[in-house]
Length: 278
Image 1 (spheres, one colour):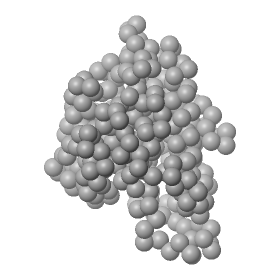
Image 2 (spheres, one colour):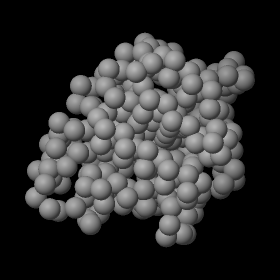
Image 3 (cartoon, rainbow, N blue to C red):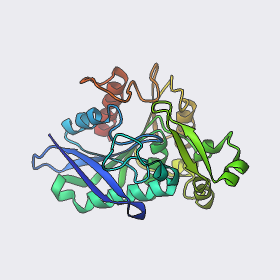
Image 4 (cartoon, one colour):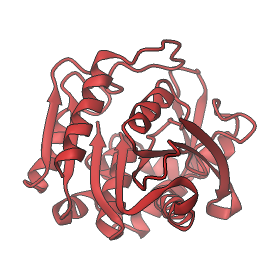
């Protein structure tokens, strides 16, 4: 088992740090690219263990930090750059994902990647990004979403948009770190200017590749109804519910255990069955 960590240029020449888990065995393997969610990062919680589990099953597993997610190369486990966090937006994340795809495709020989077998996995807000990219990029052959949002519009509900515009920034509390994390008004402007491209419902209805939707019934961050909504938009998708699972399927940060939570193991087993079936 090998883990390779490297950096590539992302939006506005900010670096995207990527972890690539793979086995060197002269076999060209399917590629899984994992997209983290809002207030997430590639080293969060049990993501390293998850990556290892997929790599053990002879997949190349790549997870990365969106360029403006608030972490830095020097501090990959902390929101050390809140100014960058405030400048993030949905199209920036879509562009970052394209650059990750481009890099892995270009360097497929180095990591023994079968570029004809690329799957996206997106968690929470990263699920929305994965849906959009899967619909617009023909290189994606399979899609898996974990506890995915159904609509970026939901992000702006119950916000005082006029005050946000006037102030230029609003703050969201990170309950884990107690940081007040800025959201610049450009986030809404980016969404409004790119509504067609950022329409998750429309993209979901057009997905024509195998799609697995996994969601916990006890998710208090993104309700299970989001999964049902996405499945309704694309009845060819496969919906799998986990009765008592929360938003992170038992994961937390920091995660100091050597064994994955029961619900996360169910998620991985379900994903492997899906990937093998299709």
